[in-house]
Amino acid sequence: MKSLQAQKSELASTEKQLAIIENGLSGNKDYALIPFQQQLEQLNLFPLVPTQLEIFQVNVGKMCNQVCKHCHVDAGPDRKEIMTRTTMQACLDVLAANPSFKTVDLTGGAPEMNPDFRWFVEQIHALGKHIIVRCNLTIILANKKYHDLPEFFKKHQVEVVSSLPFYTADRTDRQRGDGVFEDSIKALQMLNEVGYGIEGSGLQLNLVYNPAGAFLPPAQNGLELEYKEQLKKHFNISFNNLYAITNMPISRYLDYLLTSGNYEKYMEKLIGAFNPVAASNVMCRNTLSIGWDGYLFDCDFNQMLNLKVDSNHQHISQFNLHELQTRSIVVNQHCYGCTAGSGSSCGGSVA
Image 1: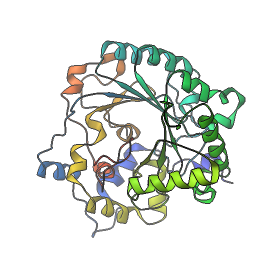
Image 2: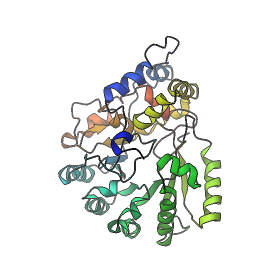
Image 3: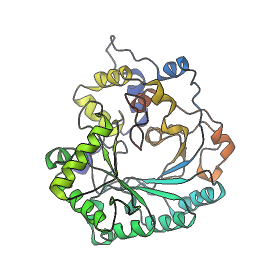
Image 4: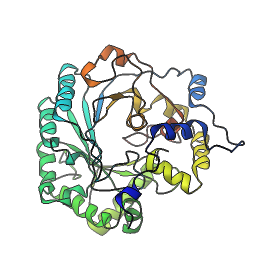
């Protein structure tokens, strides 16, 4: 069993990650990336600009009870980055003053591990916003203090979105850790018991599929039917939707691509699958991402590379809706991950 330190990404430096993303691996003269900006220019989409800001995505901290191999956040139990209540209040002030934001998407780490998580959810609910929580499922069973999360989510009409790499234990545990599948199944059953994923309940339970290797996800609709059939048959579990999400060449997944010798082939695969329709519908056009420290980003992936918004006001305490609505979105080579095939976003396929 590797230590937590050993499991953490070796590419902690965002500068190092960006250098690899932009230029490939040094010494390979045959390797050349078509700049993502060039693709947008050919479609008259550059500079890429927002459509309507509707989703307010907040990373409330990088602390997590798991250390998943594909995690682009590099989250884990030893991470100390946690959003403070002061920063949360600044977010609430922005939400109250800007009705265009209809949805608040809470991410981590395991967002539930933030000590002010429940207070934050209660305050957002009071503002009448739709709330999404990116729950890793195992957190529900990690400690007695989390066992009532299904009831808490139900009380505040939270949409639960959870990663389940596959409907069998071997593939899930290889990606997320020993015993994760068993705990995930138990947590899904607990969510079903209070009405989540049950037709007519109004309680949304959506699952997320990430490929385990250096390949793109299969067609989302077909995979969803397969998941529903297998989970119902073997565990009597129901859920609403399955989101198939392309892995981004960032942090731990970038480590995997490099150590397995698959980085350049994977990038070439993403570029070869570039979809103009997906490019025009990328999530950064209607989403604003807020980091645990209050800084603003075009998306969660830019946040992990420390690519802040192109604005004179880059912190939630300086929020300027006009600037953000008219800004140019910061793009780089990793953006190919959102435009390959059917496209990919936090809500699955986009085209």
